[in-house]
Structure formats: C-alpha cells, structure tokens
Image 1 (cartoon, helix red, strand yellow):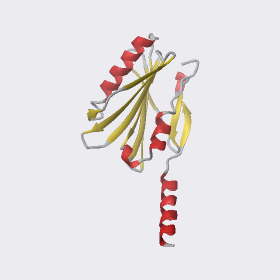
Image 2: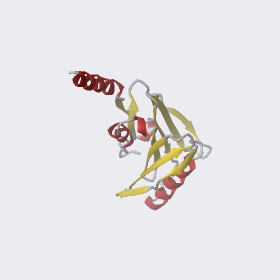
Image 3: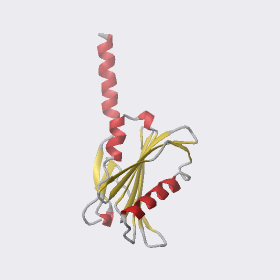
Image 4: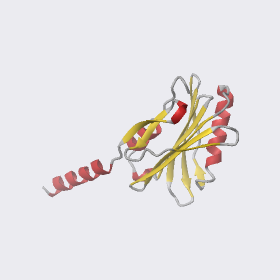
Length: 167
C-alpha cells in the first residue's frame, strides 16, 4: 500500500511539473515554434545588417527553454546556409559560457539543414541544442539543464520548430 501511495504521489508531481507547450508564430518569418505556455514574450530586434532577430528564454522548474531565430536579409544556398548555421552555433557558445560540446550531428532534407549538439557550461549544466536553416532563416533552439527534465519534454520543444512556405 505504501508503494502504491508513493507511485501515485510521484506520478502527480511529474504530471504537475511537466511543461505545456503552445505553438507560436514568429513575427514576419512565417516560422513557428513551441513556447512554454503562459509566457509567449518573444523579443525582437534588427541587426546593423538589416537581419531580424527573435529571441526567447524561459526557465521552468530549473530547466531553461530558449531560442534565437534570425531572418536574414539575403537568401543563401544550402551549402552557404549550412556554414552560416555552424558558425552561428559556434558563436553562441561563448555568451552561454559553454566549455564542452560533444559533436555536431548534421542532417539534410531537401533545402533544410538541421544540426544537433550536446553542450556543458562552466557550471556543469548539460544542454541540448538544435539548429535549423533553410537559407533564409537560421534558428537555434536550446534546453539548459536537461538532466532535470524528461527527454520527451526537451525533444518536443527542440523538434517543434517549423518553416513555412513564406520563410
């Protein structure tokens, strides 16, 4: 009986703490992604080159879900876009104080490039990162402190980015 009570209590805690995601359209990009329900504040700015940058960061139960999405002024070839995405992922490591990365896994489907990676920051937090590009838009989604969340949760967030026909 004690074990049954413990199982029910644990299940309830996991059910309550499980983040709920809601699909959100990213401004004029035509792209969409999941955000944590209750906080759909996406920040926006223009770069000096005229690119549009959208960014989001939300901590929930010691796990941070976030993204950086850049709608570039120019359209690049798939090969150029892959190089841009790799450079962008490498460049965002420094502000996040990343000290270790495993290895980028690159996947190509048509004109869409996807890159997955695992990181660790200087405080020992483990991250999972997923980047996307189609030559016009570059997006890097991340989950910080993945050891405190279920794989299904962070994978749902990271796999939730979608391009549209107008991006």
